[in-house]
Image (cartoon, rainbow over the protein chains, first blue to last red):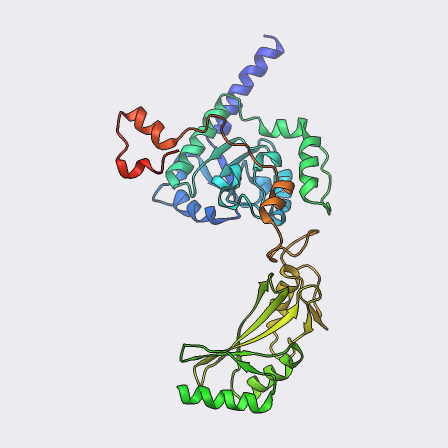
Length: 180
Length: 189
């Protein structure tokens, strides 16, 4: 057996395991935070799919960004994302992360999240119901199993482009430049 | 109630010559306009002598056409159940007025917000420069001549719309083989 094939088998097993234990760091920035308690608790019970909350960024696999992000919050989100350890995925939740939603012309909220962070799955709606959230998680599981949820890798490869976009809206950059 | 209002207005007018009362149709509401130099003394007087001990809000109104900013103090008297609006006008290009956080401590927060959002300067206000906005470099964003849409377009990238620009109503009707009712047709593109 050569290295390439054995790596393939390892990847399949890894992805299968990752798919069934998605630990979520819910970053409740906007109104979307209110949809997460019913998703996690007994009514919709996301834990039967392996989705459960994590306490800190370092223990989490998925960063669930629920709602609009102001310039002030995206600073913290970037910092949280860079503290997370591989494997890591981002779910953009609600219209505001896709195209700004109803805050498209606000002076202080960003419009398109994937300019600043690599988003693996978007859940649209304003607000998405818990069913839509679960559907988004199912979609993420499919992508992980197929090995297509490679946002973190994309972020590492295109770090300069992301950094330039981030520094354009955050002129006073005081965060550490992480060493990949 | 009206008699009580008249008594209060008389007492205010006796003490402050520049106080101009505005017509207010609500029974439990008073509306007084004064010059900006009078603001600290009239607020002290209303709090200590007239029982308006509660500061509900301080708001700022931008009168762009007249070149003025209006600062409104809203006070409430829990004994008389009367709300009083104390208004003052500032020059829009140089909006400076006296700090009143020695009368109510919570005024400090409102003044910081107004300084950031409208650019009103309060002489003697002790507070950090930044309140809500971080690293803000543009003009005060709540002024009416600040174009939020143009600023957002310049600063934040906008995702372009779909090129085919489908009409959702027509597309769904065609897909499901339904007819659009007459009352809904005028909303179609």
